[in-house]
Amino acid sequence: MLTQVADGVWVRQSAWVWTNSIVVRGDAGVILVDPGIDGSELDQLADDLDRLGIPVVAGFSTHPHWDHLLWHSRFGDVPRYATPAGAQAATQARERAQAMAAESASGIPLELIGLVTPLPPDGDPVPGEILEHEAHAIGHAAVLLADRGVMLAGDMLSDVLIPLLDDRRRDQVGAYETALDRLGEAARHVDVVVPGHGAVAEGPEVAARLGADRAYIDALRRGEEPVDERLAAADWLSGPHQSNLNQARGR
Ligand SMILES: [Zn+2]
Image (cartoon, rainbow, N blue to C red; front, side, top):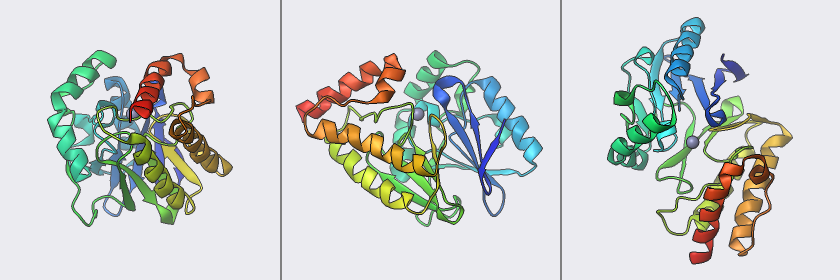
């Protein structure tokens, strides 16, 4: 089921790690951001889009991780975009993404994974402003829809996931600090944030999300063990959390 969260912005949440598929109305039709996860859910999303009655004109992947690179034939053979760095990484990691998708979820059209192309420099096919940064994944981008008071945050500002540092790159603590500054600035123009995973944040919750991610990163910066409610809520995060600590201490 699609839930409208702002003018021309709808969200459908998957049971798999509360993943949000996002539908954004543009001039010529809708843009589908990070659709997921299971094949049956993608099929239901296609039904939802049929009911909405607006054609899909493009896709956008916020970053090159498998759960943000999915597609279904019913969405149509339209261009699927990412930042240039994200598109390059997605192409290189395509086989790995297919293997991870096959392992993690069912019924995913594996042949459609990761077929993304670089967004043109003017960003024209995707409404709003693309906020690219270096945190979490290469070529990661948030989408700021300032005129609708909405930001699509990708895998940042979640109420269920802690910041997940990219363990293959150096100085992710610094990358998160810079990215959170940028998203914090953008958040002054919004009252709705849609994270890649978790509940949509509205009103004062937006600042709370920024505060939670900042507190986690600040603790890493100080060389301390972050205290974070999200860790208590999902024990499988202890692995990624430990890897964050290792990276922060080994910098
Ligand atoms: Zn994700």
